[in-house]
Image (cartoon, rainbow, N blue to C red; front, side, top):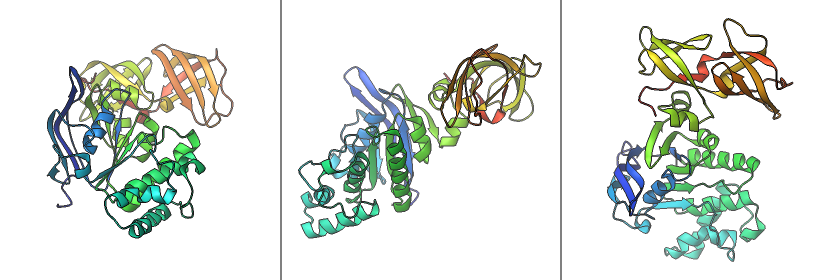
Length: 357
């Protein structure tokens, strides 16, 4: 197929279980050699979408294409995809080497050849020398990497990850997610990755598809979704946005004057018309200083203050409602009860489009 042919394509795909619709009229086309994350809360349809790609579920409507071929009616074994599960699903009685080589062996590859390929993939992911160990003799991160090696040794056209880091502690999650991203880029793999963790999605993805109630809420690059949320759901789900009422007046071109409390900001209007609008204000865009009310600031009071090492978090009672703020520069947090003057960094503020819900 030409390089421009999407590696994975959904055309108006739906999946129903009796009266329940798990995936509803979903369409997208994923470029080869990219990592796309399906992101959303539990029950939004992201895992069902992944299982539809894998052939573990059958579409009720629509068409699924892999590398230009319609695979809608094909079984999982006929789709040339591999899946890394949340539970790793390693065989406890087999060595690391035999776990990785298993798929090749059962497909008819001579054992010696399968073991050579398995050793090469273990070296690729940094696990050389662990061939003879059992899964129980490995750390959680090592087990996850064995599961990745077992998937990529088959050299699939598409590699699927279902919540791959949920069983790991926070520090190990960061390390393994970086390993997965580095491997994907180094090998130019086409990856579809499911998670409910917004930070994880922002860190590893070329593209994020945010799902809500079985549909796509927004689809785009990580920065686009963070800085230009298409609706209230995306703004609130990604990055703990504060949703604040404001008043907008259009200027020339794409810019508008937006008033919130005592503040006036120059922002892209994103299609909003003059009048009342909702703004998404990122916690790190809030600047608060211990000071009485000022004519060019929102007046507020700190109700909660938490020192978290790399940052200070504040809950603020203000004239525009309760705000959650993050200060990564503070070394001495302001105590609860402190009166503050609040200003906003425009780079962390976005107008929600008028038809966003």
